[in-house]
Each structure stands twice: as C-alpha cells, then as structure tokens.
Length: 523
Image 1 (cartoon, one colour):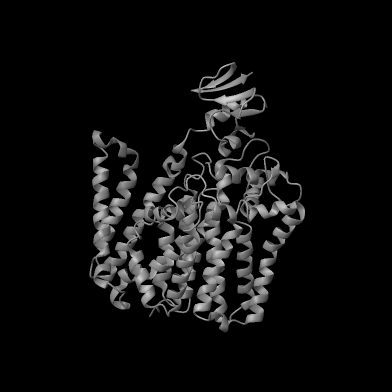
Image 2: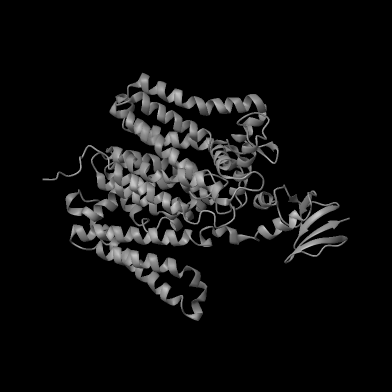
C-alpha cells in the first residue's frame, strides 16, 4: 500500500517544477522587443563596460567612461559574464543576452517563496505549493523579472535571506544557514543596497516579536552571518577606497537620500503610485488580501502571522512615504502578499480539512467573483471582433485565455467536491499561465516602449554621423538611444554642431533622414 507524502519533507519536486515552469515563461520572447528607458539600457551599458574592463579599478562600474555611482554592480557583473560567454566581438549584445541572467535569477523566487511558506507552516504542503503558484502567476513578478533591472533578482535574494533566518530557529546547520543569510545580505548590498535596511528590519521585527533569536545557536549563527556579509561590505569599502567621497553618492545623493527627499519625475501621485501598482497587478489574487490580513491578525501569535504582518507592514512603511515613486518600487511587497494569501487560497480548495478563516461565508463566494470576472473577459473577447471595439483586438487572445481560465476555474472552485475544487485551481492558474505566455510572445509585454518615440530608426540615423559628437534637440537624453547608437547623445542646449531632431531647424544642413527625424550639421 502506497503511503502519502512525508509530512516532514518539503515538496521539493513540485516546487522545482514550478520554478522550471517560471523559467520557461521567462524565456518566451525574451529578446523580441528593444531595451527600454529606464533602467534596462543603463544596466546594459554598465554591464558592457564591465565586460570591456573600462573602470579605473576591477569591479568598479562605469557609464560612458565615467564612474557609475547609482547602484553597486552585483547584477551588472553577472550580465557582463553572460555577454562574455554569448556575444561576438564588436557590435551590441542581443536583448535576450542582456535579460537572460535577471530573468532566470528572478524565477527562483517561485520555489524559494514556497519554501519560506513551508518553513512558516511546517507540514502544510498545499500552502507552500499555492504560494509558489501565486508568485508564478502574478503579472508584475513574472513581467518585471524579465527586464534587465535589479528588482526581480532583489526579490529572490530577499526571499532567500528570510528563508535562511527562519531556518536558524531549528538549530540544524546554523553555520550554513547563517552564512547563507549573510551572503544574501551581501547580494542585496551589491544590488539595491539601501533596500537591505527595510528587508532586514522586517525580518528583525518578526524575530523579536516571536523571540525566535533565543532559540538560535547564537555564536555560530552570528559568525556565519558576519562571514557572509564580508563580500558586500568589502566591495563598498573597496569602492570608498578608490573613489573616496564619491562612493557616498550611492547611499545618499543617488540612493536613499534621493528617493526619501526628492520627488522626482513621475512621482506626482506620491504614495498612490505603489498602491495603484498593487491594485493593477494583483489579479486574480487581490480579493484574498483583506481576508488573509484579517486572518493573520486574529492568529497573530502564530509564526506565519507574525512574519506576514511584520514583513508587509515594514516594507509598506518603508515604500509608501518615499518622495520619489516609480512603478517598480512596490516590487518587494509581492513576496509578503503571496505568503499572506497562500494559506487562504489553499483553504478555498481543501476547506473542511482546515480551520476556517474569518468571514468564511464571504470568502467562499470569491470563486463566484472570479467566475463572473471570467465571463466579463469573455464578453470583451467577443466584443473585440466588432468594428466599434476594434481597439481591443490586440488583446483578444489574452482576454480569451483569462476568461476561459477564470470562468471555468471559479465555477469548479464552488463545488462541494475537493477533487473538482483542485481542478478548479489548476484551471484558474492555467488561464493565467496561458495569458502570460501569449503576452510574452507578443511585443505587448513591454508597454512602456509605447510611451515615447522609438529609438531604433534614430540610432541608425546617428550612425550616419560617422563618429561626430551628436546632440538631441528638444528631448532629454535617452539611455536606450545611447545604447543602440553606441555613443552618448546628450540633450542639445545651444551652440553649433551635429544634431538629431524631429522638427525643422534653421541654419542647418541635413545630412540624413529617417521619417520625421533628421541628422543635421548646424552653424
């Protein structure tokens, strides 16, 4: 007679399978659109210059030959290795080469997030797997991780940092888990260094709340953490040694100081920016959040509740007050959201075998809500074929995949049979996965490219300048134009010279054209 899964063993194979599925999604259409502003083109250029060894000392990044002081070069260095292994001498690396490392590293948050949930709720296989499914199917996690940016990789390192700190309570391999926690802290110092402060504070609050640190083998664990921290701290000391006071710009002027004190461009809505991002990107799991938060508060003496509440509140408290608000600043919140919602979604499937959450009768109606949303999406799919709704045509395949998955999955989740409810969850998740695959196989997934003019024709026009020092008339400098033109093209602020412009100019001789754009030599 076959025995069931060992309740002491994490669902390694299932979580690994989810990670591989996430990697497969991440690779679809990875190079089918150009690098964007911001920050892909900047990350790519810094990585290329690291590959070319342009810094004044090893491991120090540059941008167009000048010291790059915005971020540490953790991910840039990994991308530089990929460029060295995959690109041909001369020319630019392909987009997929630049995005490959961030995409694959970001996928690891799916199985690691499931393991964090397992550690918080030992023996609860369903919640661990469902947490992985939520992270797999959240659009911001799946899409943003594909970009040549630091946020997806940072989410993975934060998840592994928390997992290592959680494991220290068990007393097993304290040196190994302490070293892992320290190395992940180092990784965060080499990505977006200031984010280590709220990430560590969130974990520290949970540890203090539950007094978990009292069960650590304190000397061994602390020694491992300090040893793991040495690479990150060592790089920052090396940076300060070579660049002196300039190194402080990474923390103050262009790091925490800027986002805390300077309301940059696009930050007009303030704290509403991350809230809007969460409201837009959390589907279909967003309706679970208020009920899951209430459940965590009512059971706040449990380890799962403490960590979910501490991490979500600490990170939200660090992100919402920032003066500079960009859409991807909310990215760290998705891990605590998934940890919070996983057990509630697992309860919706298993129900009678688990303690009921607060507002049970309302929660049981959420599948009907998903079913209704799915039907609405199918109506939009049908409407997209009519001339009056032709604007919906590019999105009809996405509406069909989501509509079928959500309507059928929501309906099955209403069943009294646990087998049908499990099929319902698979169907609901399958609709999301199919929609993500279709989205990533199209140019629609990087919608920010549509917010301004395409750089490819202008970069080709710039190449006709035969190495002249060019300026850009009427627009701010664009890192993506610099990347594809393989030279820095700054904003024109007066004087003679070679100019790129999409408007008529006086006292200029046109040397080349690309649509409305001209390359001109001006007196």
